[in-house]
Amino acid sequence: MTHRTKILRSTAALAVVVPILPLFGSTGASAAPLTTTITCSGQSNISYSPPLTNTPQATSITAHGDLGSLASPGLCLAVGATVASAYYDESFTNPSQSCSSGVATQSGTRVFTWDNGQTSTFPYTTTLTSVGGQSASLRTGTISAGRFAGLSAEQVTIVPSLDPLACAGAGIAGTTSQTTLTIGP
View 1 (tube, rainbow, N blue to C red):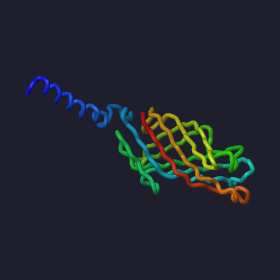
View 2: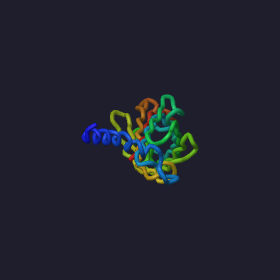
View 3: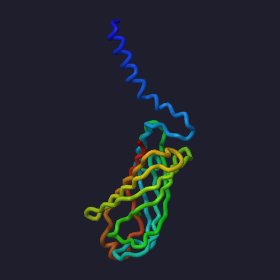
View 4: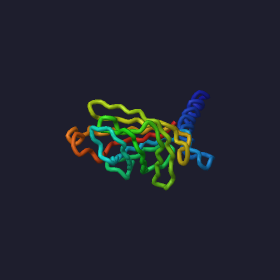
């Protein structure tokens, strides 16, 4: 074997081994490996009290989300961690909510509970976009405590178009939306 062949084989072996080394965990008890990336899809169920109408009013909003194997459909894909599912619950009051004002807060904190019982605290800021009566909210921030602390996170939720007849009448008491959470560097 020539010297050049030995160098090429050594380089090839390092190219295979080095990228997977971080996948074997970290030395810190709560630190996540730098290569950790999680993407979970699922559903968000949001209830409104009183129901949303065309008239802005103070509204209590409660969100419950199921991600991964808890949702149908739902899936979690992870690199550097083992994750099958998570859920969250969040409640807040919007002082002026209506069918046309969107369905997200500007900032808040969501706590995800993972299938292993650990939690991730996600303080976020929301950007809301509405096109043709359909809304998409993007929550961005950094996991501040618990599992995956220090990693950036974003959650995208697509809210279905609200029924204009229901908005003009008795109102809409709840919606079910598709959502995707991504955590990673």
